[in-house]
Length: 243
Image 1 (cartoon, rainbow, N blue to C red):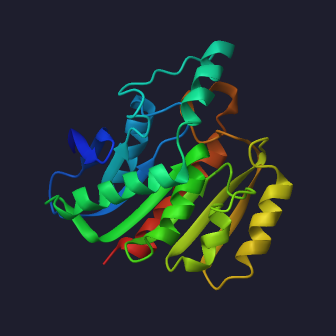
Image 2 (image 1 turned 135 degrees about the vertical axis):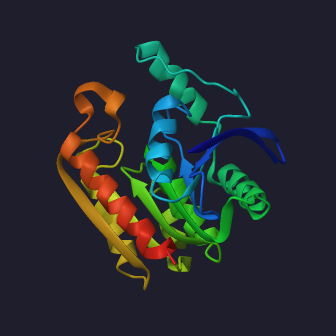
Image 3 (image 1 turned 90 degrees about the horizontal axis):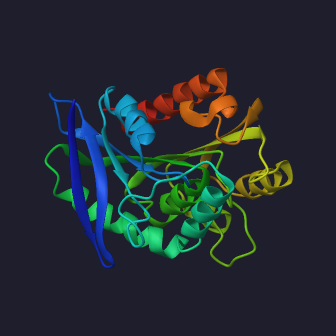
């Protein structure tokens, strides 16, 4: 496996990014990996590597680059407060601008097949990939939201409102126990999706809590659900990005 640490230029500065892909037989289909609220870290690098080993070029940016090149999350009350403060400066508009910058970078990356792009987002990035699939519907062929929060909001730019523009395939993994994405919100999402013609699958993970896919999350990590999400994600990518 090959790994790179690069800065992708955006209109707001240099976005430090982890890129990994196989050593041979490229160029590879691309997977944009959008981080969760605790930030870009080694745990996510490992998850990116797991995707890449099956034949993908994975792009994992630090979405907090405007505030910090290396945000370190501490699992304390103060650490949680700092994390949520960090998330508040992000917006769908900013992340779409960052996504545009990544797509521009990918177009010039020799190891990447820029005609085949998918995306995955966890937690706070669920709405980012959902929105990106609509905004960049000519580029993103599939996307997965894993226990995404704020998929439905009262804002005029709520991701669910632009779902009709999606031309690729969407997958939504929903934890049964999730205060950030309660059942009533997911029901609203499903109602909206059913009014569109997009190809999607929304799946509940019984007994799983928000964050179930992350091995470093202690008792919240739910191995059976985590492995199921990997199975679904790889199938989604292979279905839409393989030749």
